[in-house]
Figure 1: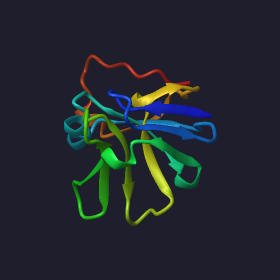
Figure 2: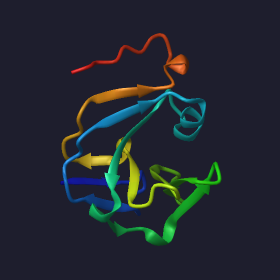
Figure 3: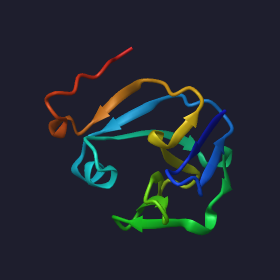
Figure 4: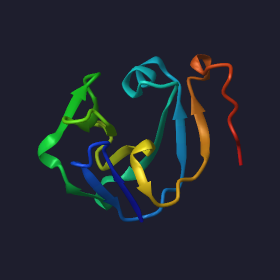
Length: 123
């Protein structure tokens, strides 16, 4: 089981399962959306994701026609994204996890935008 929340704590969630994999994405869109050098995500089935609190403060931003980035409207913390063409799957933002085991990244996307000071640990 995974527990997570936004920075202000208004949005809290539980993922009823174990994270099987994590991914780093270095694309410019993820860098801008996360305010960092990458987005750290895990694809999970929506059916096992339970929003405990904060549904009323969630905001969605459709950066493209099919992809929404979901964040807390109070503190701005990125929580997950979803695609309209991939129903039933969300990409959980792993920086929001406060309890549970997160596997090391197994894959990296858009490495051409990866800062040269980052070394990735592969298991």
